[in-house]
Length: 147
Ligand SMILES: [Zn+2]
Ligand SMILES: [Zn+2]
Image (cartoon, rainbow, N blue to C red; front, side, top):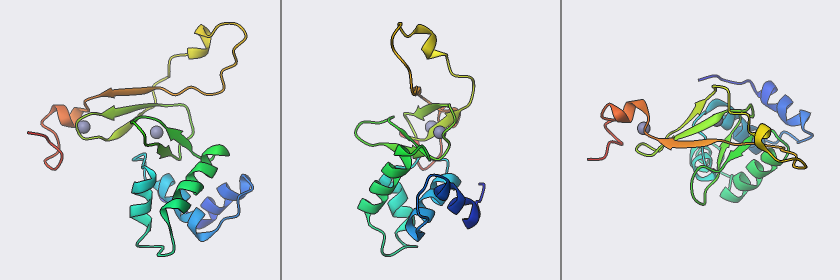
């Protein structure tokens, strides 16, 4: 796990014109350090014991603000719930339907804009794949393996 200094996290926020409050710093730091593509619930559950004043609404509003200014990206890989990723580079997400983990795949993405008709401008592409990860194909981790 990479760790990030408070200065680094504060600088990322300031670069987008966002005031680096304690809560915003903690949320961005968590996302930068955990490549698990957490949901709002997962971020809240992890940070609430450290920041007693944190509310789920604050987490929700904060990640939405980060997403809007391009500091993080949101991933629509399951019904109803968005996941968040501090890595905003182009990459593919692979969700294992057995253990539920979302993996990053950094192989070159297919160039979708080539097939877009004249007159349309692509601003963002997102590719999601669903399947079974190598560890689940080999019997799976004991705690998540379904029998
Ligand atoms: Zn799996
Ligand atoms: Zn990712």
